[in-house]
Length: 331
Image (cartoon, rainbow, N blue to C red; front, side, top):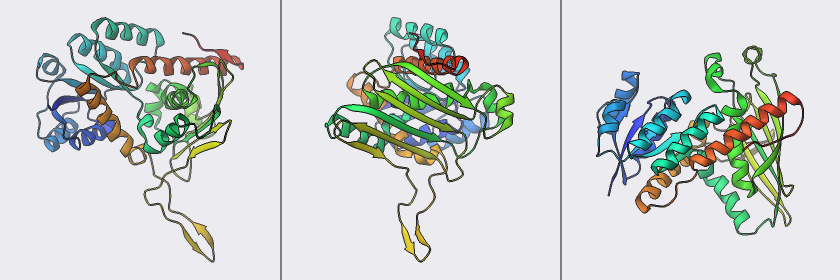
């Protein structure tokens, strides 16, 4: 059986998912929707499918699922619409920037029994999954502390900052999900602080470009997160898990993994320049997992509920930064 998919959104991340679909023989892209006709047509031409509309995709009984890569403010409405239409849903994070709206959307998903998966692609990175497997295998004993470093090579444009929801909802939200993935327990307390160290325009828009956080679970396990919108040396993505028997870590990845030694010392090639190349394998594995779940009828993960929890952690971080104190996570 081939799963027939419609792609909603033909921007940067839409192109990444279209490529992943094309590489999976169990899936077929059958429609592309975007307000920018040229962008939609380019992906449609490559896939050999038509450019379509939201209404047509909703009405087409032959379309099994939708991949939602549209702007954030459309996610909740589209999830609800296609849940009611009886289609499976893959949606990029977040569900919405407002927790209340996200909860209302999840209620529609529950009522309709729709299959829905959230796009936290880093769970599917082979290096990060190997860290999780080491934990599951008992290689480091009981998890005690997790460290996550996530730094972009440069800040996004002001127009993006205006609609992003802020660094905690836009950037750190990936790290909140990864923290839950590695800690093995839910976070109950968040301490966060943000600064403007990279671009004063970001501060003028009411956001931060640098942030540090400490997450704590009920048993006392901790996760430290370091975020920055600037890393002159490339896309900085590292994790380390410390446990009762040892530690396991995933280092930064490079397009070419070599090391040159000469009279000037040891040198290695630059890091990946951003997420499109760093997480290529993760995006492909993510779509593969979505198809697996639909074929086998198993639960999709990360779920819409995972998306809500990550958003609640982001809200807790905002409250913590504002108050200067550690705060409990609101459910």
